[in-house]
Length: 459
Image (tube, rainbow, N blue to C red; front, side):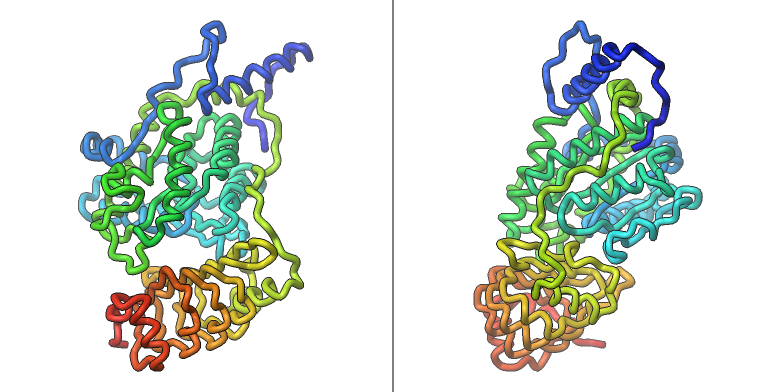
């Protein structure tokens, strides 16, 4: 990391004491450690917190002057697909009332598709646009933190020197991600005291994702319990659930996604957009964090934030070679295997190829016999090819429990897919399926009858 200002020389013992004091102050800000009044620390309480209640009570207080101010701010935003839902909500708000337009100076870059190469974002991106959104690498969950770190701190970008707002979105997260996430955010805030760092709880999906939602809720609870009132917090989980009125799931009226994964209806996306504008407005209504500015001289240059441990297999492992073959067959030679796959006990058990330009799932998938989860859903709003063909070899992947194929261009399914009898969550809606082989038809009727009926048969 790079220093923004040079500290004045001081005796070695005093310097050590000062660094220790500032580290303790920053820890106190983030994690609620007790601080003596003698240390003269300004009160941190009262930082913006935005949930559904706040949106309903305070969104209408955003003025045209506030929006003019926000349009001048340089925003660096990292996400996966929930960030696209937010962008959709911001776009709808701008159409409903031009006063709320924050997307006229917006540009998106797919770092994930580029295999984690942040170099696809021009170093002078903020000279042309004010809102830079990058699609981050999916796995491990700390990868987007590393990618943000490179953009903020490393040449040629060094966006930390000029950016006004930094936000990292998590569609889903794990409790163990809280520590590296908050550590990175605190270090960046201390290093770049003029920027505002907005913390976000992770999102929620529908009832089909109960286990995933509980992990996300646990991550969000850490944010609420340890950071609420101390740093700006955009409570994505609370916003999507309308402050948990139906439990740890998004509101049913917020989504028509057959997979129950995304809050894709205007009711949900506009709530996301309103909350985003509100937290921005209220964050800039406050003075910059005093403790972070004071700590800027105490933070030493740091390497990229530590990642949550993720198993990695050698390049010659059969599973790795199979995933590599799948990516290469679809022209995705830049995309990294470890960015799309989850490894457990020496095997690849999860494959995340959604919204990524996969047109064919080739024979190589048959090697991945330990797979329990495959995400291959598409998005018709993105300039990406959609899935059209699945190899019969998928029939060898008999451990699969979650298979998301919705919103693609599939016209049939192989008969061998009926071998997947451990399915708990299947989504095949919004394809062009017809005249399925009898075995595949019976299988689809058993595991996703609603999705089978929801097909777009017209070319």
